[in-house]
Image (tube, rainbow, N blue to C red):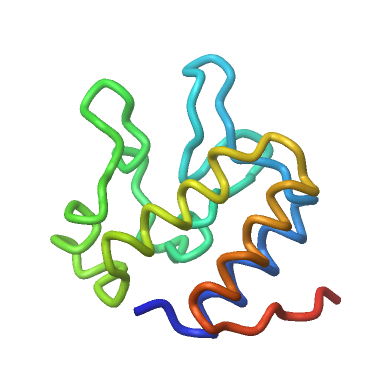
Length: 117
């Protein structure tokens, strides 16, 4: 289950990057780690020491929750939470829409929206 600390890390990380998607226009897809050092929601939960480029490998297949959990990462997230976090990032091109999507997720999961610095 997603916990407040994880949600805060995601929300504040996305806020710090101006609610801009981590999107590679060449590949036409969102990435865990993308151009301009942006991260997607899940990307904010992956420590720099744990991130590997094959997690975003389009040819081999971008990592799923199962792939992460096989590496003992994101073991506390459910499949629904993983998909909800990805969708709130990937499906919202406009920064305001993305912020609202994450605020809606906070309500759905009984979490508090953190105050951005």
